[in-house]
Image (cartoon, rainbow, N blue to C red):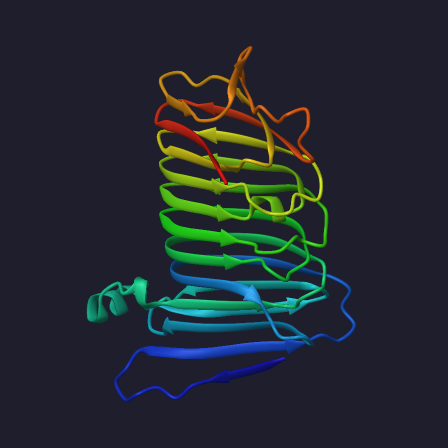
Amino acid sequence: MAFASAPEAQGQAWKDVVSSRQVTGEEELRVDLGYGAGELTLRRGSPGALYRVAFRYDEDAIAPVVEYERGLLRVALSRSADRRRATMEFGDRASERSLELELAPNLPLDLELSFGAGRAEVDLTGLAVRSLELNTGASESVLRIDEANPERMESASFNVGVADFRIRGVGNLNAEEVVVKAGLGSVTLDLDGEWPADARLKLEMGLGALRIRVPESLGVELRNRDTFLASVKIDGLARRGDGWRSPNWESARRKVEIDISAALGSIELVRVP
């Protein structure tokens, strides 16, 4: 493992730290990431590298944590005992913090990602994700995957708080089931991608807005359960029983079943070329 710290200017409380490790016979990698506030970036790393973590942080308030043992990588920021003084002197500049995480391509990954306020960009393109759980609070977050995941996932789970959250390339996740639970805020799901197999989406919304963008080539059946006072707008699907079905349901190469429950807020489904 390599660990390096960039020099800091005199009187400055901010540091840049990099930690990395090469692949040494690992057959899989489990990642447990906890990040409170700031800017987060996750992407594919270089061939031969197991991981690379780059922190920018206010050292008087928090300290980086990078722990690796037997195929488990834990990445986090821990609060300093001197956080109260740091906040008084420098202010709570959490938005200036950043974390960049690069992971090994072609190595089976089990990802548990949790982050709070700030911005997050999670790019899974080129990674072999075997399981995925993502939890986000008051953040502006985008998850994208531009090519099909080579690992078949049983389930991909997303828990969204007061956030603006978007998934681009849902069809490339290669998951039997995608579960999204959201409270406030806005969620956008782009169902583009290769769709190696049929799949199910389970969506639970609280008071926020849900927008689903569906390619015209994809067969879709939507069941609208327990929507209470939610506003529902469905474009390009025909009413069928307690839900809707796309005109190409029977002939489509790939089919996706969508179950939605919502208390308040809005639900919109649109067909796109």
